[in-house]
Length: 118
Length: 118
DNA sequence: CAGGATCCTGTAGGATACTG
DNA sequence: CAGTATCCTACAGGATCCTG
Image (cartoon, rainbow over all chains, first blue to last red; front, side, top):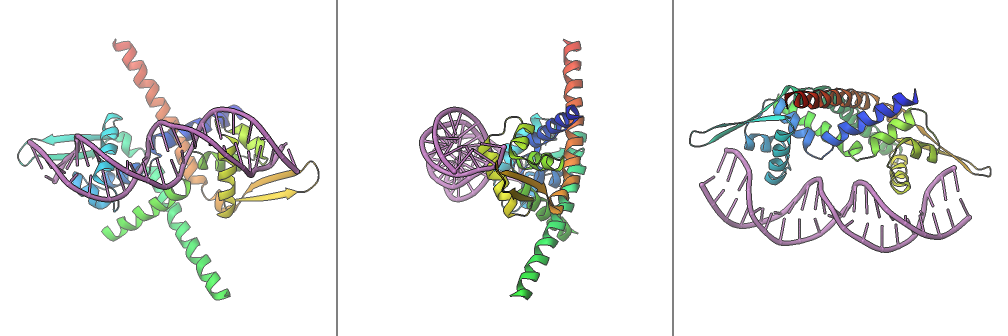
């Protein structure tokens, strides 16, 4: 019973360890949405810098979260595609998007309530 | 269409903003599991320091993620309980626990495969 | 286009000790 | 028990410029 909770806690922390950076999940989401090129991914995530995107992609490639393919024509073409492993994070992302939307609604309602009461 | 993706990205980032720290989700999970007292929560999350737990709980109280109740007998008794808002993160946590378990299995399989091939 | 190289800063988070 | 107070630092992440 408690055994089980400890196990769940560790599973939770493992996941946090893998996806717990500011940009990791947004990048995965972007690639899962079909963005493939570096600049394309970059533009799809306002605020990210080339440095962070580069770093994240490199680490994600090592961890088999994305596949990097180079088509050595010139100009050089590079494509990042999601692996099955990456796609398996879909439910996590979906849950977070859903919560984020609810959250926003809640914030807006609260703001309205405050305005009308003042 | 793209409009929609931008909206989902923002929802995702909002959620990350709220739960994206090393301890936030483990704490929520602990409280949702019924832990109420400070030391109880602390003990349920190996590695966390009193300082971090204290800071997180304080901020979570401000954000209405937990309710803090003081029973002013002596010795003083304090209880933290989850709000509905807090509980609404259940699906996010569940998805992450599930992924973490799969992830562990994957790591173990990989390790075994490497051992047998060497 | 796809990044690498540098420089810089805040702050998340750790360690330790103390209090009512 | 339920925290607060200090001190400390590694590193995530930003800004900017550069290259093949």
